[in-house]
Image (cartoon, rainbow, N blue to C red; front, side, top):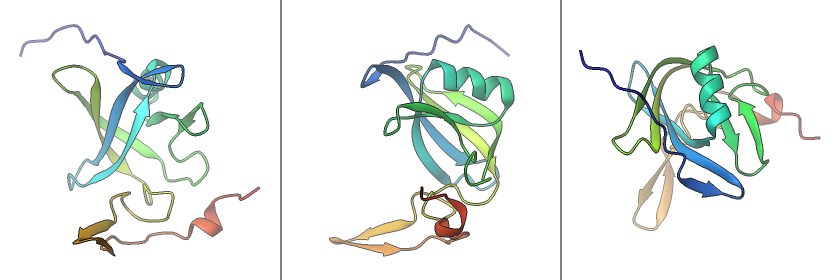
Length: 132
């Protein structure tokens, strides 16, 4: 098996952060759970702890997935695309990945110009997140 040095390309600029696109995928089912961004620190912490960390573009801070909800993502495998500017994180998801309570953030299907909910809701966000 051939190995090579990984040189992540943090080319996506959001605010003052250089980021890579991060796609979280269920390790067993291959369902896409969510898409987020990672800066260098988030990627490093993800590799070190085997728990997914991301860069929140709305809050402008590092966050551990599940720190509020308890719905952590245990990292099983990380893959990188050919340009090294996107990562695919295969995870074992505890609870739902979506902050709206669904297993996946991709819980709606486009039908013509309408959205149909096709995902499974697995928790009530009002009971999980502190609104203060």
